[in-house]
Image (cartoon, rainbow, N blue to C red; front, side, top):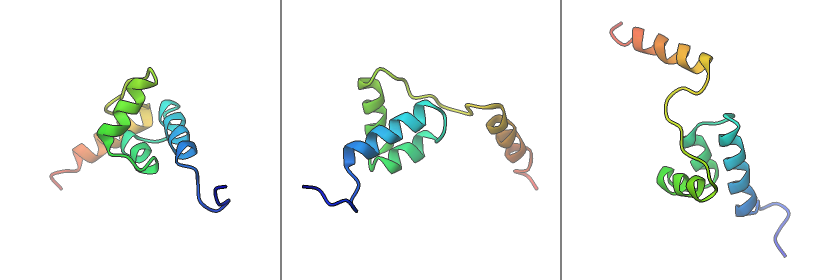
Length: 74
């Protein structure tokens, strides 16, 4: 029987996929929380019928990226 203090890897993977699909976390963060490389996590997504999305996924994320780009030369 698994220890109640150690998380089940399957639970971590399912949580990471769910959070990524719901746009709660980035691809990188999802892969990290699932303890996979980004490429391994992308394969998991594809096997589950989802595609990896790149770039900003919300208006706030886009605004943040624009602000960073504008401040690069400062």
